[in-house]
Every structure is written in structure tokens, then in C-alpha cells.
Length: 214
Image 1 (tube, rainbow, N blue to C red):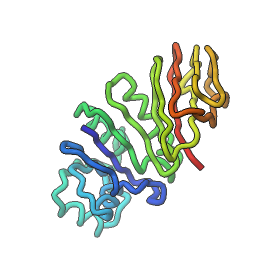
Image 2: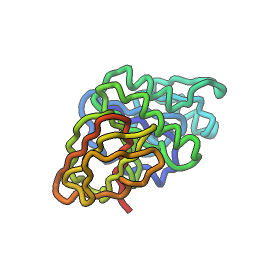
Image 3: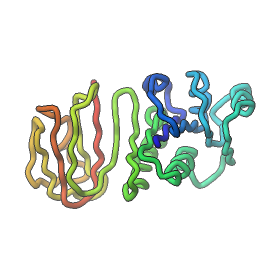
């Protein structure tokens, strides 16, 4: 099962999700204004989460009259709407969760949405933040194969916290062998695969991987 969560980030940064191929059992979730965005795109989400403080009264009325299962919260709370939606989605144990509308707009929300990936690192669910130019995921230590994928030209690796030790990149334009990557270092920014696939591995630490294009 794949769960797609759409939040209320700037519309122009959200890919053309209406063209996404869905399978039986897949779910769409709207987060606050992202719920209305889905309806505008002709997609009926199964669930909605939020305090709905970023939409008009008329837009909220349309959502309330739909067949969506709505989880509405107070505006003043300890979690963001996205965190609440992601917590619920993780509890369903899907194979993959895709987060749209999570970047752009307010920088504090964007940074928090990316940091939410840390909450998923010990699970078997692949979680990605996706916009029109980027795909962001988080990785624990291990060895991974990565395929060249359109439209992404660049692959960057950032230390999510502290130091990443023993990072090795094979099949990349700029290979590495048992290097150290510190938080705040640009050592692994804007790399590229030279063939159809490559591998990366590291011994300790946490990596944030960003696939991107111009």
C-alpha cells in the first residue's frame, strides 16, 4: 500500500499528482489546505487532517460536505497538522508514504516537514518529501543501490546530525572511499551517476539524500 499525503504548500511546487498511477488499497490524505487542493484536482482523499485555519469558510464547507473522513483539531496544539497525518499514516504500515506540499512557503514548516523524516527512520516504510524539483529521503547506515531516474540530474548527501562515517560512493561522477561527512559540509552536494545505477554506503550516522534537477 502507498499513502500520498498532500499539505498546503505553494501550488506551483506540487507535481502533477493527478497523473499518479494508484493501485487498489492506496490512500490519499489531505492536510489542511491540501485537502481542498486535492478536490480541485479531481482527487477525492479518503482522509483529511488539520485545523483548517488556512482555507476560507466556503472552501471548508465544501470539504465538510464531502465523503472525506475528517480528523479536525484545535488550532493551538503540540503537533503540526502534517505530523498528525504522518503519525496516522505510519500506523497503517504502508510500503511507501509520499509527502507533497511540504516545501516552499514558510521556512519553519518546510524545515520541520523535512525533519519529520527522522521519525520514520527505524520503520520499514519508505518516506519521501517530493516537490517539482526535489525528492528527499532519510537513510540509516547500510549499503544502497540507486538508479538513475528522470528528471533528477543531481544526487546530494547531507549529514542529518553529527558525523557520517565511512561513506563510499561507487558509480558516481565524484566517487568517495570511506570518507567522513560532517554536518554543515558540502562535500557531497550536486553529485551525478555516471551509469544507470550506482551504490552508496556508510558505517554510522544518518544521511539526508536529495535528488534534484534545475
